[in-house]
Length: 107
Length: 351
Image (cartoon, rainbow over all chains, first blue to last red; front, side):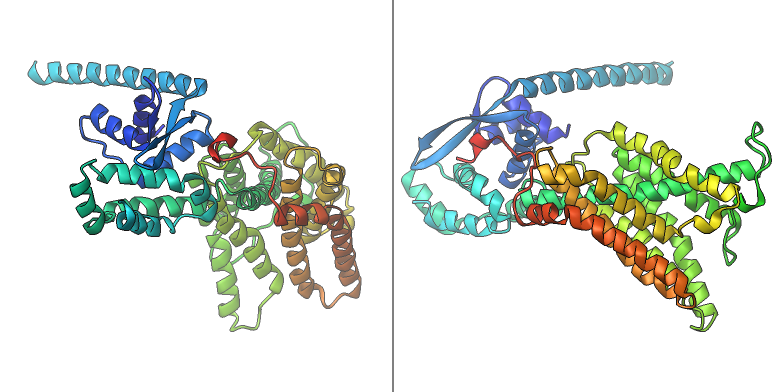
């Protein structure tokens, strides 16, 4: 799973969001490191929808335009949990190795 | 309110395929305008007059357009062609891989590496062409197709493409040396046709493989390799070993007959049109038959001295044409209309 897809799924984990809402949430989640352009966002959304990980939730009118909201599917929730677990496990290994390397360097 | 800004962004979105815009354009425009407009009428009026999509925004749409056009993902008809090309490439590499497996086993046998077998008959010794390359290169090239096939099936597409691209180089060099070294006197059409249709064409067509391309039942494709060897090459080896090699077709004839048999085997599904992916399979088989037929036609030039062999070649072509006629209507229908491809996103999104 790409970093962008991971952030988009995470942005939808606590409830449905519309396109620009996802952009804002991803920026916040990543501490401003990931700033999705609209073209990139819809590339990711199209892929995730194609894989059955997200689906449309509802449409709401806003300033004369329709905002389409997206939500995670059950598969999407599972894929996100799996990816989060994988990333957490990887982070644990990295931290452990850095600790060992740090101990060796100072010792 | 959003007139000019919206118009500029919609102009950029024209880079995207029509089918994609139908489903996503309004949503993209709404998200884009959300990213600019503040809700303050005065500020928004200025923004819509003066602002436009940034270069980064345009680049993101261009990158998305490139991916959609190149991958063929999403649009049913493009998907059908892409999938048919992928299956045809797999079928060609399967034939080449089975041939490589045959060369590997025969070489092992003739070099007494299969100790439990009696000595290999002289008729089964694998010969390698002379020329600039040592024999080891030819052995490696033969075996490389086994690796290409397996890596393709296992979805290591980049690895398969690199190995296949390397594997066709020695043949090309050999052909060029033969052609120019003999000052254009020796220009056999068959080897050039082989290189173009069975080496270069599959390598180029491998660009149709990408990470969004679904490849169903990889296990069955993997099993097809030993099955093809046992069902096709082993009987041929038996014929060779028993001195009946005059019954053997050349590789071009074998390729034609294999493509014809695949068409005949698929014909009931093509007629019933009930099985999933039947139309795409028909299209793939027509592509495969076109490749085999073209190779047969060009390689006839090497047999012009022998009327009997020409008759055999024409008979093989006739068998191929008759077999492909069984699946051609289904293939044509699939090429014209949408294929039974999985939708790119749930139907509910086509609002």
